[in-house]
Amino acid sequence: TITPVLDADVKQELEEILSIYEADNCTAWDLFEDGHYERREPDIDEAKYCAQETFIRLASEL
Image (cartoon, rainbow, N blue to C red; front, side):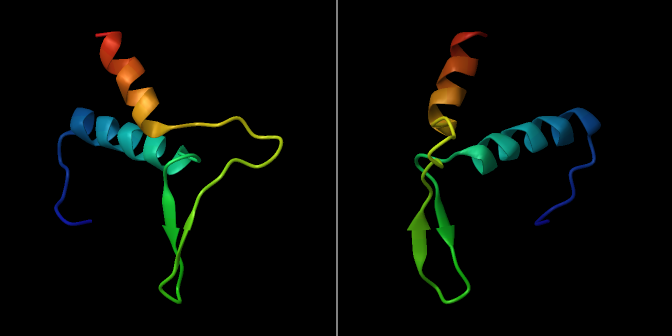
């Protein structure tokens, strides 16, 4: 943690945002211990999930 998040509502929203990014399997890259990056791709039986598309959809629902 860089800075503590004390407000429970803000903490919950931040956790939701981070979970969306963690689930991204179409635009995210993973950094490995040896310093190389690999782009995430959905498994054969897994649906494509893009964080930015999710945020656009959520924003349009406001």
